[in-house]
Length: 370
Image (cartoon, rainbow, N blue to C red; front, side, top):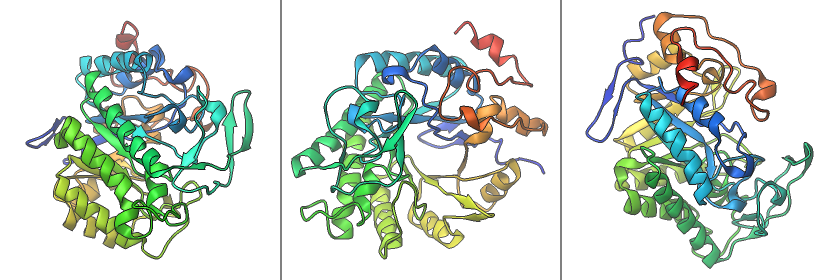
C-alpha cells in the first residue's frame, strides 16, 4: 500500500511537519530525580525522523509526578535537561512538544521530593498498586481533596510549566487531559464529588481543564497549545458515566472556541475494536476545525486509510517507535518492524531504550556525539 498521505508533509498557517507520523507520548520512566539525562537526549534525537515528537508525560509539580522516575519541568535542573533534548531534536530537523501532566491521585509520595501530599478533586482512592523505590509495589494512598484555592493553584502550575517549556525551546505543549490523571479526574463524577465551582454540572466539572487551556493559550499562544483526551478509555480506575459523551462534546466545543493547535485523541484497541467509536470520531471532526490526531494500535496501512478518509490530520504511534528509531524510513521502505521488549518499557537503563538499531540511517553513530 502506498503511504502517500502518511509520509507527505503537513503544511498549515501555524505549523509545518515533514510527515504525518507522530511519536506518541510514552512514559519510559528513566529520569532520576525528574531530570532528563543524556540518554533522553539520544533517545529523542534518534527518533527525530517523526513529523512530530511528543515527550513522556512530564510533571508540572513534584506531587504531580505519579510514577517513579517520571521527568518534570518545574525546576531549573529539569529545564536544563530538557533544553539539551530539544536542541538535539532540532539539530536533526525534528519538532518536539512536551506533554504536561499532573497525575492527581495516581501516584505515591515516595516517588517525588518534598512533603506535598497526593491530591485529587475528591478524596477517592484509586485501586491498584504503584511502584516505589526499592522495586516495591504498594497501594496508592487516599488523596487529599484540593480546596478551591488549591485547584486554582494547580491551574497556575500547568500555566507556569507551559511557560517553562517555551523558555527551553519546545515547539509547543500538550496538556494531558487523558488516562485518568488530574484533569480527567475532574471531568469524571466518580472522582469529582465536589460542591464548589469545580463540581456538579458538566460545565463545572470541565472548568479545571478549560481554565488550564485558557491560561496556557494566554501565556504561550494558541498555535503552540494542544491537548490529549481519552474518552471511554477506562484507564486508572475511572468508570463510565452517563454524561460522558456529552461532557466531551462540551469540552471539544470550548476547545474550538480557543482555536488551539490540536486535539490528540487516545484510543484503546481491544480485539480489533477501538474505545472511540467511529461515529464519535466523526462528531469530533465536525466540531473541531484545527488539527486532529489519533493514537491507538495503528499500522502504517491503517494510518494511511484513516488519513485518506480525512477523519484525522495526524496519526500517533507509540510502541512501534520504541524498537524502531527509524520508523518513518521503515514505513517508507516497507521494512519489517523490530519488536520491542516489554520488560524495559517502563523501567531500566539504556538497554531497551537507546540500543535499538536504525536500519536506514546511521542515526546512532551520528547521535553519539550529541
